[in-house]
Image 1: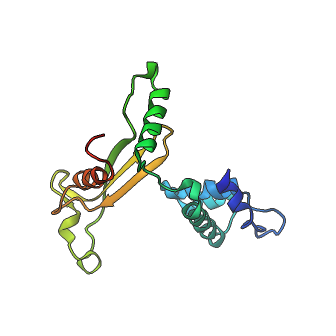
Image 2: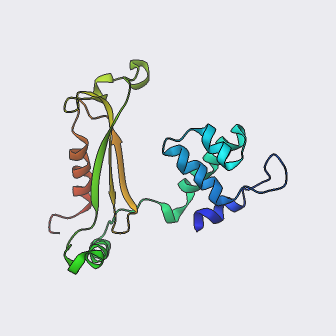
Image 3: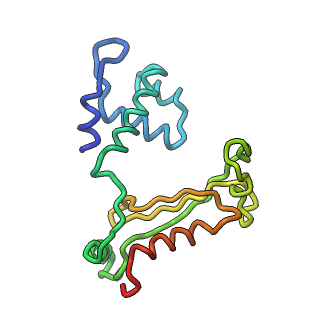
Amino acid sequence: MLLVESLVSGSYCRESGHMMILPEIKIYCALRWLAGGSYLDIKANAGTSKTSFYRIVWEVIDSINVCEELALSFPQTEDECYHCAAAFRAISHGEAIVNCISVADGYAVEIETPPAEVVGNVRSFFSGHKQKNCVNMQAACDAFCRFQYIAVAGPGTGMHLSRVTWDVLWTIFPTTM
């Protein structure tokens, strides 16, 4: 509820001047738009103008970014790792999942070829495996589906992102774990 609470203070009257934009409506607008929805449909459902719609979306995004309780938090210590592993063990059937501190997955998002003036190395966005331009995203979540780690990079010419992610995570933990 911390996100909802932070959005209450920023609420103000709609164009009619009679109703406040509820924090839940603000979150709906932002999540629906971030998921690929058209602002036209979303603003019609929420009863906002185009200007108010984009103000709301960025208000929610800014609130998410400054909410410490929503910050990414990958376990850094041995105690934190044991706590994460205990959570996975507790939610698994018959406590079958042991010594798991995070689950990770990735996705290649197809993109148009970016202009060289913008990215410098256009080839870094070409995936030889997928045979298309894309951005490689990888994320890790805890047992409660909260993001712990996110990485986004071009898939081509350099090290594969999963190798970069592995190298980063390997430096966090001692080899004795």
